[in-house]
Amino acid sequence: MQTDKLTVIPPRLHYGALINKDNHTMTVYEDGRRIGRIRVSTGLLNAANPLAATPPGVYLIGSRMKDFQMDGYHYDYPIRLHGDYLLHTVGYKTRDSVRYYTQELEDLGGAASHGCVRMDIRASEESGGLNAWWVWTHLGRDTRVIVIGGE
Image (cartoon, rainbow, N blue to C red; front, top):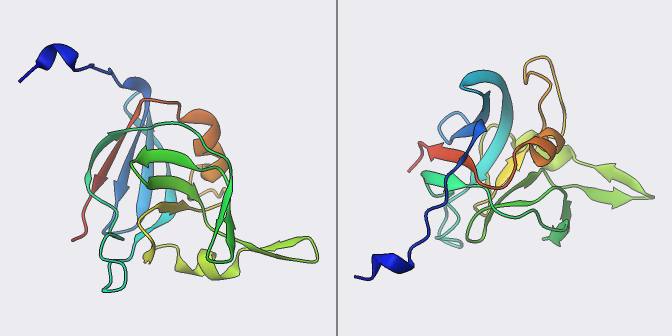
């Protein structure tokens, strides 16, 4: 095996995150201290989509991407986690230029996505003031994210 072609990418250590698929939360750490916990939805595995489960593992955050649409919903702040798996906001639909997040906000705290991690858009005292926008602006490329739990 040719190991001389491998590249070692050291993780950024200032921030880190732990996504727990059992309680559908993303806990964010700064310099090893817990600073907040965001409600999320992770992948819903089913017969129609057998690759929908968010895979457990240790990842380094990749590139930021443009917002996108899927299944009639619009998603903001997408960040590549691993392969086709992303971190992004819960989706919304628009009517008369108003964003309606109702359905996907109700899905937070459970398995609901096609494999991506959908993050809450609301910052609250419970979340430590963190939300999807905060993750987008603070967790840089190569920040370590650990995904645990689930099937």
